[in-house]
Length: 381
Image 1 (cartoon, rainbow, N blue to C red):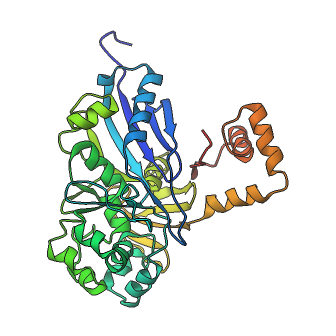
Image 2 (image 1 turned 120 degrees about the vertical axis):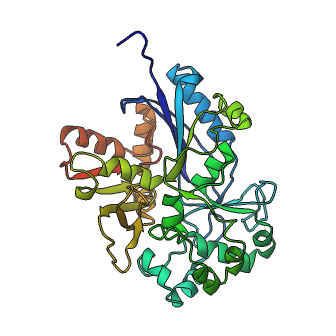
Image 3 (image 1 turned 90 degrees about the vertical axis):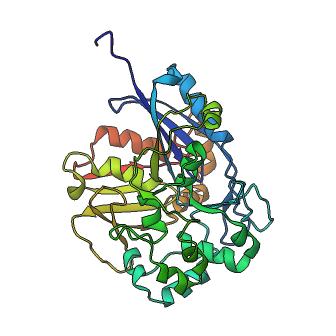
């Protein structure tokens, strides 16, 4: 290597409902190191799941990844966030607003898997609004407009005092840079942004009972919608830089939903996006494929324009409780306790033996090139 060259690092920040992880890939794709931190997610109320929106754990992980790599902070060329499609609610001062039954302001995130808005989603679907054609014909209670409508009807004070409603990945870039830009990925897939027309549909919001969002020209849910990877503001603010142990101004990219970040890395190999289907697996599972033209399939989410691969349409389907169901099945197995004891003796950090066996089998027998799988097995690192 030329003595004038230096290693440049990119930092990927992956925020999920389970442990958050920070990956530090080297310039030529190799993973240099990773760090993770656990945080509390409450699922105490029926069909409800909330979590705190603090940055302390994320900053700890970033500092830890920096320590592991031994790299100088100034060698970090940029930061990218991905996160679950969870709803973050902030007041006019940027402080959290409570979304939990207990009224705890620290719990200001409605987790993606929260189904409190099932009734609201059913009413929205009954409208048969044309916008729904771009979410497979029916909106899910896991998407954001039913959740916001639930807040309006059940937590009126929170709704009225909300300055911003963020998808989690967009909240993280705002918190790091102060930039209110939203990602095409997040708002197209979960908020009914019509990316192919570059607009919100005011009639949709008025029809479903969220006229206030349209009346203020969508200032509370995003007026500047940009592609993933777009630079945010002037990079890290002085405060965020100090918290993360990085230089102020370090570039931060507009993020993606976690599954879609995995999807990009999957469909981009060998045959390219049009010839590969991504299967991203974690608590939920999601299969994603890209097309040149929009494909409308009832019950299959999309088509979403440029939501994952720029210039291509995305359709996706999956199962919300896929990984969680497997987790529960393993926990019910008569040999579960023996497996956990074996894991402790072997000093394995994954929850069960199954992920280890999958990894060993995958090394022995390569997956066919047309099918790439990304397994987000929580607790597997």
